[in-house]
Length: 149
Length: 140
Image (cartoon, rainbow over all chains, first blue to last red; front, side, top):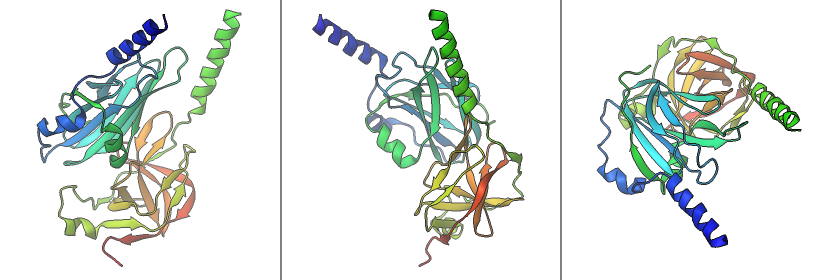
């Protein structure tokens, strides 16, 4: 019974995590950032905490990523002002400005909620983000928003 | 028993939400810009780039103090009525109420007097101005 439970937990963990190559391996195949664009990384390092809570992340109202455990999503976008939002019981948002050639890093994590964990977005330093993302799976590229806010 | 527990949970939730204060700001449009593109040449960028000489802790209206760390790099971004705006180049600076907003610092007469929110184009004054010393990049 103990083995079965362990296997079940492991299986559910693997199913719940983002799948794909490591970001470091995938980056060589990513298109180079255009000079007229900026790049936004959305990532989540948590594995077990709030595993089943994986809300979508929106950029200026357009879905670009999921708050998926161990996953990184990348969105290239024109310079401008942006608001990234995600919601479970309540909506949480982070606003930032993006310049051409600039990279921004938004970390999503699941915190304590009343009935469902709250998804929280943070803006993270480049050095810290690169360190945290090094072993995460590249989960996909989001669509480029039509226009900056 | 269950209804008592539900009531307690709801009360805790409301208290938790109430604890997340709103950021108190005032409109502050940029009067002039000196911002340097991330793609600008090193020479051009250095003219407007500064290194923080000592760590400064400044507390915005939302109440949670931000540490502006010694050795971090800042670029002159522009001016607003309240002072000169500097954008961090190697740290993510935010002010937090219930939500999170990217922030730049506002300096006047050698003191950090507040934070400027680039998306909201708004000024968030610090509780108490704090002295700040920056040197231009490349200076000894």
